[in-house]
Image (cartoon, rainbow, N blue to C red; front, side, top):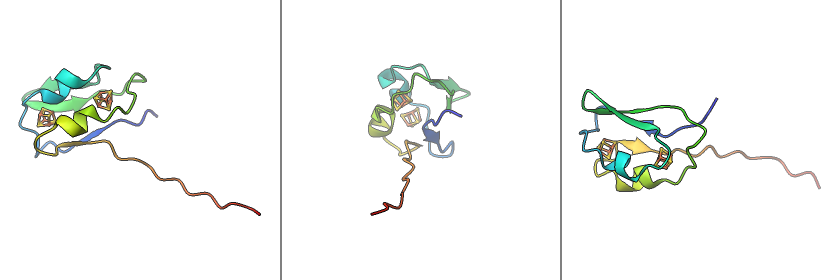
Length: 70
Ligand code: SF4
Ligand code: SF4
């Protein structure tokens, strides 16, 4: 499964700023809200999160910890 940015629809005002900065075509405006389409092209550039004025879209990182054997 491709990890993609996450949108909180209740916070999205449909301004479209995130679409303008996205280079992979994953962000689509549907009925005034952003939908995220899974694509291998998303390089986690974080630009959608940075540009969003309402904090509606985030790129949550998964932190994986591994025990180091000495
Ligand atoms: S992280 Fe970058 S490439 Fe991925 S959806 Fe956001 S703007 Fe597009
Ligand atoms: S920048 Fe934020 S508020 Fe604007 S369309 Fe994208 S997710 Fe919605």
